[in-house]
Amino acid sequence: MSMRSKLLMMIILMLVFSCTNKKDGYTPPSFPVEKNIEAVLLSDDLLMNYAYGMCIDNKFVYVLALSDGHWIQVYDKHNGDFVGSYIQQGQGPEELVMGICMTIDHNNSTLSVYDERQQKLLVYSIDNSGNAPILSLVDSKYFTQYVGVVRNAWKLKNDNYLIDGQLGGISTKQKRFQLLVAEEVVDSFNLFPVIGFEMEAAFISPKVTLSPSREKMASGILFGAILETFSLIDQSIKLTDMQKFYPPKMKMMDGGVRPDADMVYGFASLCSTEDNIYAIWVGDKNPNALNSITVFDWSGTEIARYQTNHLVFMIAIDENEPEKLYALVYDEEKGFSLVYFLIEDKLYDCRKA
Image (cartoon, rainbow, N blue to C red):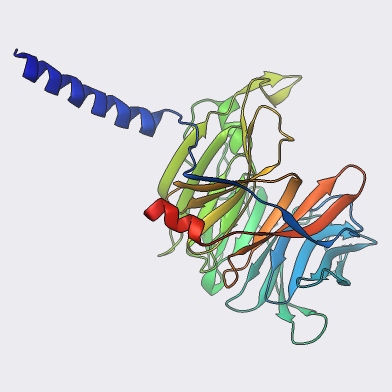
């Protein structure tokens, strides 16, 4: 074999190995744009101990947090003024026992909240024409009649539902996502990008965001860092892309599955527009290193990383105002504050240049 042939063969092998490693292995993220950003304070007088969700529309910020017997706290998105508390805690038809997830659908002006304890999804219409929104219950979906646990639920188009749970028959194996149409499970996605019971446990209750059209979903795990994107059209759940940044490292300990001490944590919270996915990114062995906000496109490709001087707890973005990323930040002395970060659109053009 000539020297030229040997060189050509080495190049081919290197390309094959590189492609295989990127597909099957883990590659730490590399962001073409990295920038420090400052928070703009809206309110540092939030009466809450913990938050489970956050959404925004063109006038208000909605925070899913139990305070004074009510689950939803609403703030003016322009000046941070507290507007009011909504949805009582309780077991009544319009009440929540344990709200764990909240989403907003701008297409029909509705707010959905999933109650894990009662396994029901409540949908409220939003009238925000006045100085405070009016929330009215328009739909409630109970999942207690199905075989299997529903860990989380989201309403899609045409009264279809996306489920994170164990629907579709009794099984001892962990399941992931199911699509419910007309009371029937019409499709499921139960594949894992890892092998082994301990590693699969990292995918229980992942961070999930739906695109405003409800036709795309992104799922990111905190234990390790794997970002998956899915198509939800045609009554199906199809994996479209996957980026593996850090492996989950889990082990059996004290009768349960626990994260290993040298594991790198990944996604702490997600939100999205039709163009991009936004994440509170850890990227560290310390799970409380919540100082970074990252941006990905819907193929999972890295776009930008923003470093802040805050512990960012929750994020939300408006499709019609993508230059502002709203957030709950936490301070040990002040507690939670409502802020927003200005994100320049030109940063995204750098990736395409």
